[in-house]
Length: 92
Length: 453
Image (cartoon, rainbow over all chains, first blue to last red):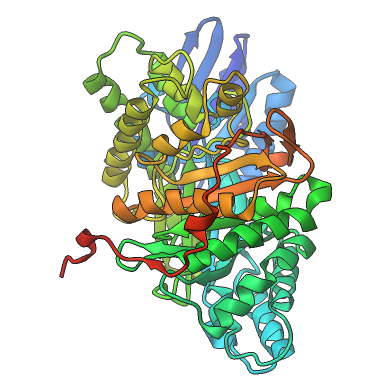
């Protein structure tokens, strides 16, 4: 099946268990993590994931709902965006 | 990772803190098949066609906005110039067409519909004359209909009879909407060299050379360009031009993506990206702020024209690289009422109409959204239009005038429109009378460089 790649960004105050919580939510919905990076920028935790949702029963909008709810629980801002926006903007 | 963290965070920052957005997805709809000798039948056909074609426009825009995480501020419709559509009607009033368009706009959920338009640069047809006569009432009785009149081109010259008539039409429109500070005039644009594929209001219409339906996209990004310039206060002009180009490239790519995707989902060909820098009244979303960030104490002071020329050119170069289909107006907009920095410059006396006119020589689109005293004569309004049209005609570019003579108000007062239209300080005009010049009538001949064949 063709990959449907989505960029997930998680931004907020650093704490224990952020990656685990997000990874768990993705695993629960059969979403494969293709790549992951994280940094601490001016005390803010910033995590970027590239995920493939082609094997999931969730579409991008349902995934956004799931992650928004999780973000509220964690006190973080979590966004999921179609990969193309980054591809178009940053690649010629 | 395919993208660096910096790239991803840059995109997110552009949207969240620098007001990057798609200003409008505008669907162009041809109404050429809606002509009918009976006005009621014509209006029915117009309503059915617009609502049929644009039924899913708003929901599609909202879905794309959400999936890509990019705000899409407006969905709009442009239609074939109504003067052509209603030409065959031998009864009724063209105000009926405006009402039909307004109703169709409400039914589809768009906030503006453009195309209550006549192209009269060389003269008037029967339909043109009837449409012009209907503009004041049409602007007063509808909410979302936008009117435009093309009175000149580089190839045809300037129709001074139309210019003279428009002075009266603008005055009458102001009078009929005086309870709302003449807001009717904010929906009426007078063009020279009008663009047939412009997605921005109030001047959008679906030109006669356009296909059956089309999707055009207008991007916006003054805040993004402003942030890029502020980060490099020490750079020289070559480097500054370079960073503006890079920024315009990224903004335009986003427009191209959204336009293609909207076209694909709606089954409508994608037309153009208009890569204009369109300000809003929001703080930080100002073209004037960009010019000041380049090193001017206030926009309107000496140096402003040079700064704007460089900005406008760099935006075009970056945008042209980003999309194969650039069109519309494509340049920096400098409306007064919609740009907090422009308003401030007028309030402080830094920016007057003379400098504003000079600025329009080097950018799109013209004298836009500026208020003048309510007792301004129709001839003075016509003369303002003639000056601006001359700039467009000679420089082979689009110029426009959207002037608001606010009844009962004088220089220093304010006109309040709210929303994207903002508020406009009433500006002072020259006290000298151009009446005899305007009343001559006829046509200013096309300039020598129209003879290119």
